[in-house]
Length: 193
Image (tube, rainbow, N blue to C red; front, top):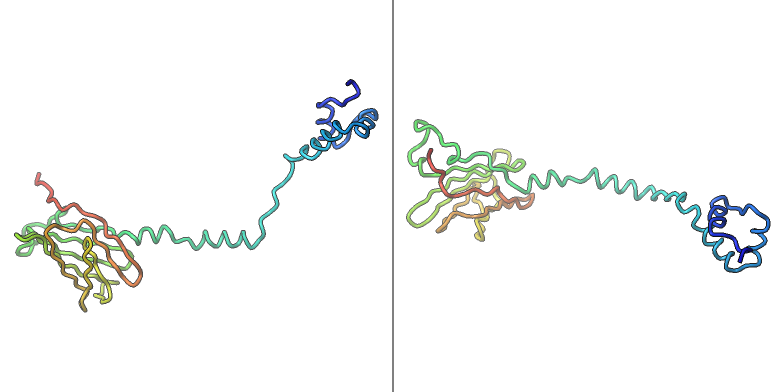
């Protein structure tokens, strides 16, 4: 038993890649158990020193290109039309309002180069909405607004008209560039303070 190499001897020898005493070296030749332990220790002794190989240059270039191309923040911002004005939140002075404007609500959304201007009125039979879609300030055809589940295509002046018993919970704008959800609004009139 005393002829066998101690584990400590084998581990420290494997780190140095050599055994110190001739007797231990000779013992490895004659003892299969110690030889097996030596081989395992030698195989794993430098494992912490192994460097990871570099990825192929094509992979690195492709990953960098994907990061550069990512316009996710732009697409996310464009996928939500931002409410820029709401007549109920910021009412005009009485002298600046037109006739009937006190009850009508005017909303404007923007997303990129697209604008949606909407006028909503509540009547006895429900809500009437008239919206105009503009691209770079000009009326366009070929767009559509979706009020809840109802899809309304714009006419030559970019106007869409919708009526319903309740105001829409969700409005989507469909353009040649994709679909944009307009920022939601509450349809309960704010209380006067």
